Image (tube, rainbow, N blue to C red; front, side, top):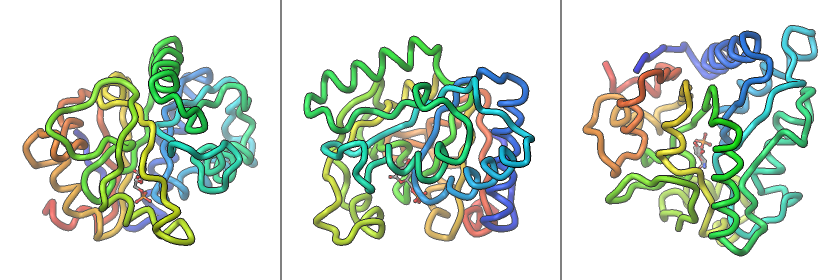
Length: 242
Ligand code: GLP
């Protein structure tokens, strides 16, 4: 694991965008694994700015997102489908037909998840997988558990995740209780992993991810076993790692 300390959120976002941009320049038809949450928004904005300046071209890139709430339609403003268009896809020249997010609108969890596994495998898995981290150490929506997950599956969100994500909804009752998420094993198949984290609220999770025991109680800790994992975090998120 390589840990890169950023001064603040802007610095973290630029550094992460630089790494993603290098991937796209080196391999224009690369497969990017993408994440939602507030943390990557600054990196998406920076990439969109560079696209507008003509520095980066997404026309051949294909993308696979980590997760989606179960039960939300694609045009629901709280869905991750919507989030990705709003924060990234609508601002770059990616072909929307080459962007993929698990189908939360399909009530048949087994069908939605196995279809997602099929297309991620057919794409050859991400060249670069971008990840945020939950306060409880989750990646995608792989919550703390007694085992590491494998492929895409339906999860019951923990109270702490529902609480943390409720800030983005009108009321906590509106937060979906389930999600479809790429599994931990699939995430580990990515050839490079880039984790972004900022703020004091992530300090414990970032410490446990980087230095704690490798345990499904902190799903992100498995990234210690990945051969090409880079963490870009600001000083506050790294405050327990000194
Ligand atoms: C959600 C997403 C994760 C994300 C996490 C942290 O639960 N499923 O992929 O990493 O939130 O979000 P934030 O970046 O807003 O702290």
